[in-house]
Length: 112
Image (cartoon, rainbow, N blue to C red; front, top):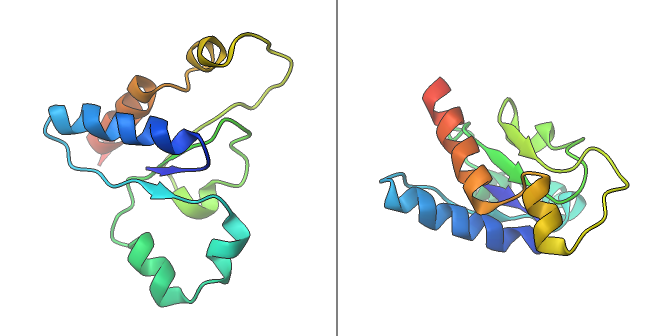
């Protein structure tokens, strides 16, 4: 799972849910694509090993652009604007929860 900012905590919570189901995962905090892209190839490969292709991104923003990092994985985010509610309620209504992330990981794994 690759997450940005406050979404890292959701990914960590999803990691715990998956661990309870016997699924091992890793969480990568990627606060800035540009800084990560500027790192040398060996470093990038150590963080996002090319052999690990089951990837899920989590960002409470648009999903556009995430395919660079997740390939054919799952991008969880918000591709529309105008919703308003308390943060936790809004995130739940938009499907940005630890359970939704964990479920996306399981669906992606089932495809492989």
